[in-house]
Length: 291
Image (cartoon, rainbow, N blue to C red):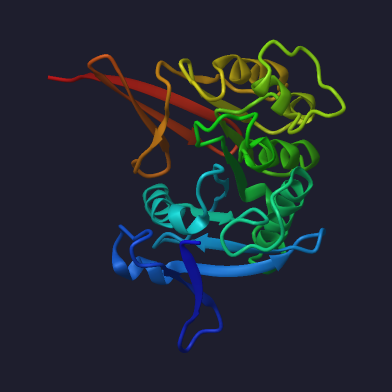
């Protein structure tokens, strides 16, 4: 666990305390005061930790960020702070059951209950309507053998797809290296969903009705590129996908109101901006040759 809750003087809100030597806040120290910590109960009875990071200006949209499996919200907090400030959006995230300060154990059922509880906090406690929430799912961030620790690998794209398939009122959905299902990752060539299959996003994404952007690296060594292609083709609300000629995608500090991905291709740096204009996600790309 890389963080804890602290009480703030003269405020009823809880703040964030990062564990020394484990992670650090890399933004302006004063911006740490804009981080609000919350807890909530899921429908399965687990207490989950949530984090709301606000930019210095009033934000219209909120990104509901479901992180990858190898981190917790403490480790991601500095990134959230930079992302929210550069985009001019709120970034809200949460730890899955059994992660960070959240109770319970990681499981697929808990995963779906966790993200629903997070959305409930946004709507009921922070008064942010679903129509101003952009779901962002980050996939598996570990190269550990999927079949060995399968029950504990919780890809952030999975709860995001599940929630979007049930809630047509959210603003949009962004899927960062999504997987079709657990069996299809562990056993490439699997062509159908079995009763024992976990994380069957490929069966849920046809029900998604909100603008959906799929981002995937063509040389991804953890979640094969074919997964991103199939998810994109199966989603009726897909916008033009973003295929990166690399095995990884790095989230960086972008210019205001665009999400930027940077990756290297040969001796080029590829800058990709993704804008949300209220009805459609669009993207622009620019290549700059390295000296």
